[in-house]
Length: 296
Image (cartoon, rainbow, N blue to C red):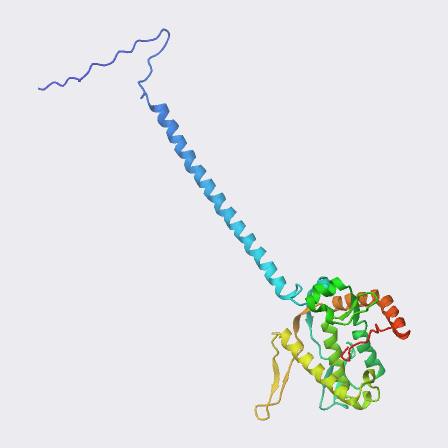
């Protein structure tokens, strides 16, 4: 029989007075517990920091994308564009407008060409009422600007344009009304028998033809410039004759013409006193006569 003895004798721990014998504990237990706690806290802090960083990055990205998209949208359709009159920038708003056809054609009706009564009419047989509608649309077409505004608008070439020598003011219009004026000139050519009895600004027949040519070119270029991409569906098509009809009554994204018209009226009203003064000086024989161009 083999006897086994311990390699070392048991350690004697004396009893403290009034005390009890405590179990023998490892001397490094407190430091180990503290280290484990620090590790847990470190991992938790890293996790919280990572979540916060991811959320903050995502939020900043969304804000940046949104901020970048807003100017792009505004600059393409609503902001003032290069070459446009900067003082009119507050009118450069957009709105959705549903186009309407004021006339219809019905083969069984008498007469076949009918006109709607719920919209203002700008087409059809000439009449004083029709002319008043166009006059209201085109009234207050020109106004005056200062020399500083002229220089900032046209650059160093501004001096080649007409100005009132007494005040240094320049006479100017906005192209949308000039183009509408040209459209009205073409309309009058369609009914030339009616309107030729009322020569425009006393123009000769040859000058009037030039006026028409000018207006056709201006309208063509204006349409090409805007290049509206709103789709127009075909409602009827004859493949043999090539005849077809389209539905033009659709919603378009447009400049707010009412705002432009109101702004133009205000500018023209502000110029009325100067306009009258220039006219009186012209009648008195002064050189600075505010003649409208023949395509005014």
